[in-house]
Structure formats: structure tokens, C-alpha cells
Image 1 (cartoon, rainbow, N blue to C red):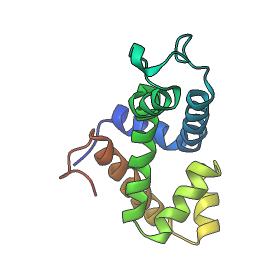
Image 2 (cartoon, helix red, strand yellow):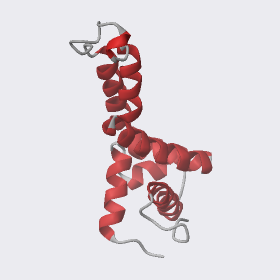
Image 3 (spheres, rainbow, N blue to C red):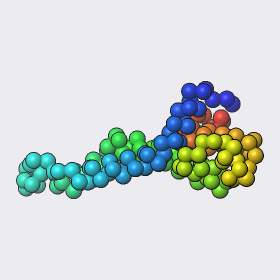
Image 4 (cartoon, one colour):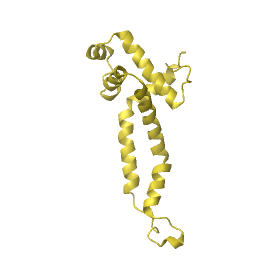
Length: 140
């Protein structure tokens, strides 16, 4: 099944920013953990205030930024875990190292342009399925 060009491009965008998302997630977690406690958090527990550590733990679990980044990162990680080493090597060349030139990647990995296209499609459709934007019967 063919996927709309816009969907394909969106998934490629997510793949191209995978490393950025990992850095952003780490920064967001650090920001939450290093944030100042609320003004009244030092008051005794009997006043109904939770301790600052518990508040930070809840913020980590409930943060929409953290959840969104984790979802994107996990979609790529789950897809790559199901694919071959050749797929992962190609993902690394294209989306981690930023080598978008097909001829260069084919030469470096010793694969044909047809294999390049198939592997790329497997990666994109797999991530699209994990993100819930490509139905399972379309995922290659």
C-alpha cells in the first residue's frame, strides 16, 4: 500500500530529528530534576504538600514534552530492533550521520540502489506503524 507523500515526509522528518529528540529528552529530564521546589514545599506534610522529590517524579511521568519525545524515540528504537543489521547500518548513515546522498550510502554499505530503496521503505513504514500513522497492513 502506498502512503501519502506528506505522511512519508513527516516520518522522514521524525527520523532526521531522532538524535535531536534524544538530546531534548535528556535536557527536559534534567530541567525537571533541577527545577526549584515550590515556595511552600518546605512546609510539613500535614499541610497537604507533597515532598519535592515526589513532585519531580510526577512531573517526569506526566510531562507532555517528555512523553512526546519518548514516544518518538521508542517508535524508532522498536522498529530498528525488529530490522536487520543492514537496516540499522543504513539508518545510522542516513539519519544519524546525515549522509543523505544515496550513491554515497550505497557505496559505503556496498548495497544496490534497489536495496537502499527497500531498506529505507522498511524503516519509514515501520516507524510510521509504531507512531500509529500507517496501518499494520501497510507496514512492510
